[in-house]
Length: 231
Length: 387
Ligand SMILES: Nc1ncnc2c1ncn2[C@@H]1O[C@H](COP(=O)(O)OP(=O)(O)OP(=O)(O)O)[C@@H](O)[C@H]1O
Ligand SMILES: [Mg+2]
Image (cartoon, rainbow over all chains, first blue to last red; front, side, top):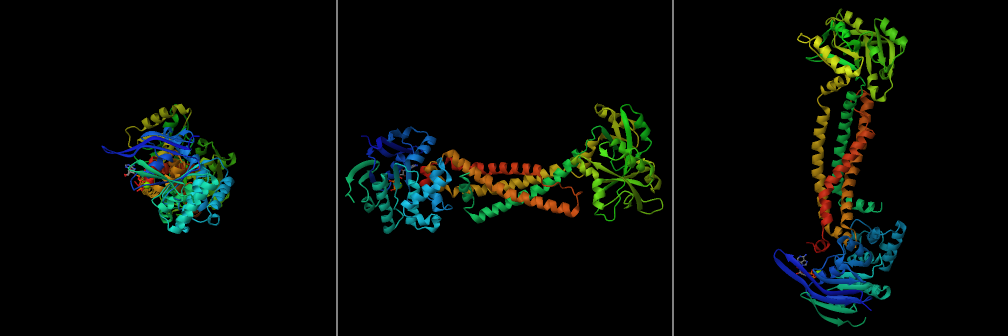
């Protein structure tokens, strides 16, 4: 059985003037459907770069990325945008919610790109908010929510269109212990109960313990893979 | 429109700034509405007259200079001339200088040249046979509540009577109607007998203000005009003959080229508006870079981001501009109610709205173009990393 994510010989080179910086060197990686993978490594090792490539936010210099049987490195920019809208959910360190919209409207955003009716969009957003435990905060604006709550709204937004893959870049990087634990438990639950495949970048070994596997990236190469203790 | 909420909320992200921007858009379009109303009034006045087969002959030096009445027989004898009549500006005042309306002394065949005005045969005859008779347009009669048989006193400002008095009194013997709604402003004139005027006035006797000539074929208009002017060539009263339409346009331009002035003012106002709102939009996009990156991450295409930002700037201008034009409509109606229909302002109707909204959309697109392009070109990974 082939993996959900197949990465072959992946390289990413940034050019700054005449200087070339090879951020990723020939990365080989398979991620099975249903996995919860933590990606660790020192600052500048290329974690965000790898995550953005998997999420289809950027294109590789060399190599291939196949997700669910589709070569996403070959898609045009607009085709990639369309692919993202139905296949990947994103969670960022700084939540990145639209400050003027209520929690529900924020969660609804990805659904604007679908054919769903206003009533269906509202219902799906309500279900997603329910799932992250914020049904009672639907009408609140981001500014009226705590950091942990905002991140849960962001997670609701990431899962509302039911993507197979969730990519999270330091989702707990800006949260206190308690809120971080809540967010990580939520991700674990989404992985276990809803079958979401999750790739999460983190600096925090405690956060990585919530994942099923941990990958180490160093200077653009995967160095080790360790099995985390099952939770 | 499921994106409207998104655009609307983005617009009010910085409330104070948006309100101030809206106010300046509002002010600009309030001004536009008022000026365009004035400009339209003058444009209508210049083009509302049918008269392409009527020629107006005035002194070449100035249309306020009079011409000898002896020209009449010469003009009438020219080939291609069907009818000729003459008139004098009187400039009388009814009760109060605020009650401005045109009043002219005209020859007894004057109305024969204006068949498009409805005046009964009995009234035409009465005008001819009543020495002190006067005929007014229906709008004017309604305004001052005049009925046939009324005596209308006018206070002379230019022409006193031989006895030195300024009081002229006329007997209302006819009321004419103009059916073409575009020419309704021609219903605000009082005409009285030139013979009475010429006998009674203290000076200028035997001279007329201008001649009106009807040509037998409008194709001959230029030829006849040239022939009329040739009659007085090299005399001390050289003439200038044009179609009535051209004459009216020229008359209007005595007030300066209203269109040009309005255009120049609005150009300056809109230029300032574009700089101002352009800056607002640029700022709005700059501070929203991470949010725009999120929209793209979620799957909004580059073009939908472009469209969203353009929609935002168009909405901003249309919203503020529409309020401004509405206000202009209220102001114009109030002025017209206070001063009367003679004020040179047309109502803020469909034509002005059409031009106004067209301008709003255009300015919105201009203002939004650069910021929207920036938003469209935004690279997600750079924006997310704050680069
Ligand atoms: N657009 C770019 N242009 C030039 N260099 C870049 C660009 N994006 C990333 N880099 C460089 O690539 C390297 C890896 O960056 P990346 O953001 O992937 O690191 P990271 O592992 O996520 O680090 P951190 O833990 O600090 O988030 C860094 O040296 C960075 O400066
Ligand atoms: Mg990073």
